Image (tube, rainbow, N blue to C red; front, side):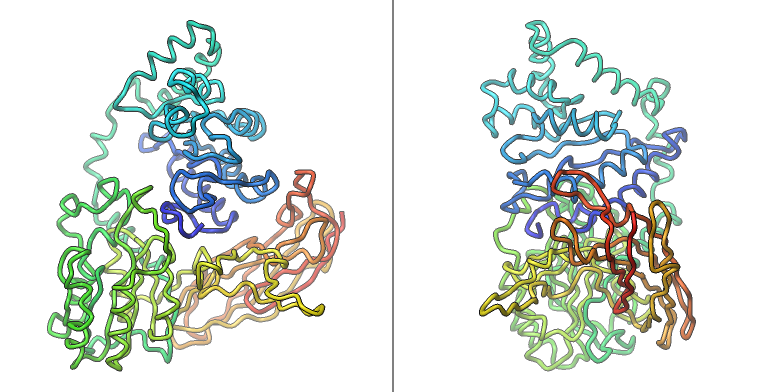
Length: 574
């Protein structure tokens, strides 16, 4: 749900990416099962289907059939549990009318019994009492406590009100919550604390403070920001810009630190720049350092919402003697419900900036500093280049400048479909029936997936070419593995990184199959002219889906694998 205010906290629209990235995060946090002194307990969040809000507003209902829950929302949690995650936080909303904090089926039957989760289940902020004050499924605060604990909650996140403890004690004394449920929850919490060594040293962070901000960590932050930069458009190779160019830098994000970091950065909303490190740099600063302050003009002021940042006439006047205009637009930081919006399009004052810049005849480069894909369809044709910068952290400014002026070759890929309009929010792994635009006189128009930029999109300053896909066999039998190989050549003039994306498609199935599903990906580095063969292995589990009987199965039949514009067919035999 691209409207959702917690979109930037996700790994995108694809379950496989969510699963892969989630497992990587859990493994890094937990460090060999919490055995190392620097390990921390990971917390999966939010269970379950928090991102599927019907309205796109935070903490609002979702209505999802069981088959979809199991196909798209459970696999990531199942994988993270297997990777050893220690705790899980619960969705503040409700699914099919039942608040998740009171849903024993999801918390106990599915999470505990079916998926085998042994860690701590924790609420989100004050969500137990909200069973009474917001969801109206409990008739009193005590009944809310009883419902949540009996459903499977272990820990309540209420740091500013201790009535929960008194209400729970009262409920136990009245026999409304069995003591075995209390023992179970306490045992899990104490076990986790013991694993973390908190009984031996309750303040381990004191020793860790000396490690904050070390040069190697600053470099790692820059590496991450570099890898995130996603070049969406580069007409006539307008990018990279020459370092001798004279550039006008405009837009509300040009002198904003908070917009580069996003939600939960130093503060809840991330907007209070007083808390940011003094060496944090804006986009304007980094561009000025890159090409010299004498080559940079700006009409912006500090403060995202400063009126000067939206003055289109002033921008036009300043563009008279520049070679290019870099407009830094998008969203300032937000988190949770303060980020709710009813309109995904960028505000008119930002769209008007783009139109004003384009009217000068100078090439316009858009730098999108945003947490979710804000609609730019009306001004996309006016831009020669578009760089998706996201909220990539402290080093976002440096990464943007490095890409714009050619010191870093962008290689990021979209983990979501960038929509064209509010009525075009179809996901990449759509059903073929979602592609139908028109059915008339037995003629079907199949072009329903037309995002502005598709899932997996991302350009480079070099070019890559695929050879034909080679399969180890034209049949995949039983529990065997199938090797899928492709040769990749850097056909451009400079070195670059490239992500190979492997998709599969079930040609016919007992339920309508998806058009394509991402099954594997790998990023490689190639020098100009270099060629490399990349091989993936897939098995029947990679082809499985949840059927109408809610069973995960792989059906015999014909399949197709796709890499870029190359395809190959094979048959699965049970």
